[in-house]
Image: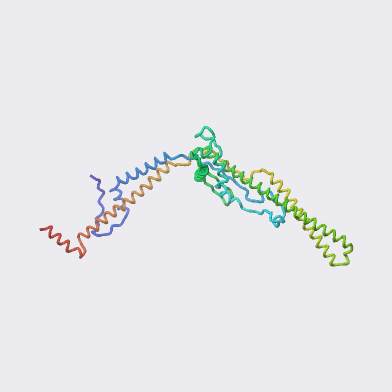
Length: 353
């Protein structure tokens, strides 16, 4: 025989029964076996899932990229004439672009195909081999590896400090640290290569511009020389003096531009062969001591609480709904509508007969 809940206060027939703590208590008491079964099953499933889930370990590295393009290229101290010629490099907060650069294929492709020492393989293997996603179609293989690596990656950019944190979750602690450090190395290699490429383009542009300015300087100097040879006495002629000043000014401007370009050419040559790191690694990724997921205890507790709340809520609504339906049927039987009064009377007469 089913357990009977304590008797609640009697209600007037037809009264609307509201959901209160008292009604919830009686509903829980009435359906306690079903609630316990549901909560136990849900918690058991969550525990089994957390036990079967692949344990992951998180490693984190923090980097501080150069915030100034001018500092990165070592062109501080040059005059503003460089900007006027279209080759100047102003201050630019480029660190905000690094999260997008880190997630790009340019950085992650060499990370995926880098050889790592793992417990799963006796020989160093890349991530595609480690995850078992090797395929004859290299594009499909790379896309699968790229998608999985991006899911295992979290990038946090601190706009106030300008720092970038890269977190990697892998099946092995040492592998997670190696992948995070490899990403930082690839990012540094990319920025260094980009800087050298920009320095090479700058050098080529400056050399081309110097040839043009040198030709202009030679023509202006020749024009001034010829003018002075033709006009030995110009002190009595304001027009000739004005023409001489114009030619001398042209020589001075071309000479100034040539000197500035010569300075920048020497700097560009130095930058072209410079090989210093641009990415400053603040924290090198280290192997994690404990796993980051799955958190089995927390999963079990959260599942238990959520399933219990769901079961109690459903029991309360079911109990309230069933009693509301019984009350409605009782009211219809005791006070039928006028259209149904005669058929009900005939039925009662037949039953009496």
